[in-house]
Image (cartoon, rainbow, N blue to C red):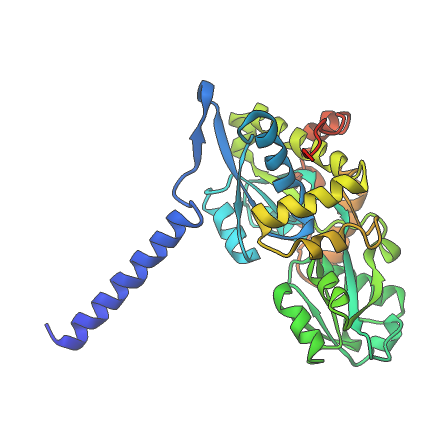
Length: 347
C-alpha cells in the first residue's frame, strides 16, 4: 500500500474517531436516557444558550437545588442544525425548537408535537446607533440579517414589511448565525439585524446598537421557540412529558414573579449552563422588564395559524400540516394552573 493511501486512510479514521468522541463526551449523543431511583428514565432535552430557552436550565437548576437531581437532562447545543439533527436522530426525545421549524418537520413526516411554548416576545430589530434608520420604510434598499430560513425573526420581518406597505423585494435579506450578528452590525456590513436574545441586547449593551423596535411593540405575544417532543415519548411515557411541561411552566412563573428571581437566574444560568457574562443576561431580563416573558405559555391555535400563514407566504411552509397535526395542548392545560416554584436562592 502506498504511503499516500496509508495517510489518507489514517486521516479518515482519525476524523471519524474524533467525531464519535466529541459526540459521546461533549454532546452525550449515544445515551438516550439514564435511570435514577425507582428506575424512572430521565430524558435528554435539547436547548441553545438563548433567552427563548431560559426555562430549561432554570427548571433543571431549581430541581437540583430542591431534590438533588433534575427531572430531565439538559443538553446544550451551539447551533440550530446541531440541535435539529440530534432530535431527528432521537438522541433528544424532547427539545426547544423554532416554531416554524417544528411545523416544517411535521410537514416532512417527522413525529413531532409541540407541547408548550418557550417564551413570549424576547426579540428585536437592531440598527447601528449612527444610522439614519428610524422606521421600516428607512430599511428600503438596506441589508437585513435574520438567523435562518425557519426562524420566526424571518417571518417577523415579512410581517413588518407588509404592515409598512413593503415586500421582501424592497430589502436585501441575508441569513446569518446570531452569534455573528453583533460583529456584523458593528462593522456596518449589515444595516439591521434580528434574532433571539441575548445577541440583540449585546449590541445595545456594547454601545453601538440601537433598538429599531422590540417584537412586543409590533407583534404582541410573539413566539419564536417552542417545547416539542417525539410522539413516541407521548405514547410511552405521558407522565414524563407532563412532568417536563409542569417544570417549564413553574419555572416560567418563577422568573416572572419578581426581578430578584430574574437577576438570580441571570447569575446561575450564565455560570452553569450558558457560559456567558451574567451582565448580558441581566440586561436582557430587565431592560425593559417585559422585553421577554415566561408566562401565558399555552400553545394557542390563533397564534400558530398566523405563523402558518406567514410561513406559506414566505415560502418555507407548504400548508400540509395544521395545528392539530403538530400541537398537543393537553399537557399545557393542567400546567398553566400550577403555581410558581417555591424556591429562593440562598443569600
